[in-house]
Image (spheres, protein in one colour):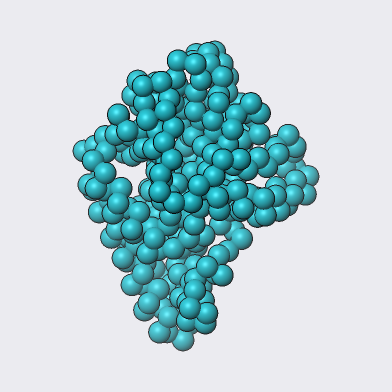
Length: 295
Ligand SMILES: [Zn+2]
């Protein structure tokens, strides 16, 4: 696992095993806050070990940016902490999360999850902001949808560091959320005057890189929207979409440890489903796919 100090008392962790998923720690004099808890117990435990040996304060709060397994399944390894998240995050963990863990356990080789227990947020909110004071720093929690409906972002106010969750990624992933909400979130993030964006996956974005990262993500989203619209008019929309590469839409396939092409495919197919659901029911909420739970 990679680790970096982002600013005073603010740490960043990145998985070297699964999709470059990230987590954070903000340390105060008496206790610490963990943001997201990674997918694999061995990496969650490595964060805990770092806190125990280097920071030497207990973890009082765990904040989940959203309910997906790779951000929340490590919650149970901080049994003394209160978990904080969106009210929908709690709901999704208790339904889809519990089911997904059962499925993962049925795979006998998947012994790694035997000690995992779904631990949903006990403290929830669904609009406005929630401020948590850690030492001298304010953590401002705010809903940030797009990647999923339960997304929240955490701003370390004094440092202008934003833990964006998956609303900001090297390749926007909208299968379990909405393309329009992702655009709204990215634009909102671009106006926050940030030093760093901590993406839910991938590397830390530095101040000088924010503008181009924002532009690239918005161009990508515009391109896949256009492709899906064109595909929807064809007799075989999926065949048409299979020809549209991630590069054509303005992104590199090497992003996210090579997962970018697969995520891109899922994005295009999801857009077709979202559009069909919108036409059928006037809503895209019913069109979420179960394969969205991991990333
Ligand atoms: Zn996610």
